[in-house]
Length: 282
Image (cartoon, one colour):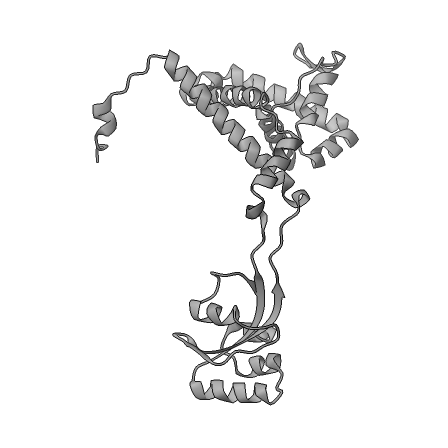
């Protein structure tokens, strides 16, 4: 396959994928840009296609209008050839087209129904106030850690620390933990992220304090608390988008539940319970 053909197929696939995107409809500009065996490609057709592209390709299309128009022409020619060969009548293709049509119609119906239940700023603020306790960040600690194999080594390290030794240097010298390369720094953590024995000790330490030796199945540990970030209530501006999405998702689910309940109440649905309840053939 030539480089030019690969380019055509790639761009055509990109353009074809945009068919499944929804956008607002308006009066398409009717001025023709090109005709392909009598099929007119209008300014409106071109602009509508470009509007559905990612931002990067939109910028390219505005700079290289002729190239993108050529891609639309090539796409139309390939489409006509597919019809000529009867590919659209192949069972697998018909099944795929039917499935795509079903999904598009369902998605459009849901879009229409959800739009009836707008998420307003007042609803977002109300949700934030009602669930304010859920927007509190947990207490975060940061610590440095030295792990050795024997109690004797741990006592030696602890003695040097009490004599004023530098924790980071001693971690690099003695520790068997991968954090030794960072001077023992294990970063920030919240409750539930450390081994229970280490966590219990860490959350009792004062800032800058070093604990006594802790024994675990991995070895002997010495920990120094290096930072502490107190819990805080996250501002509405930080979670507004997440709240809006949550409310939209809830509205969509309610709409879907109500719609299905209403449709099922009007429909005649019969289920073969014997087959549904039976084990599939093995």
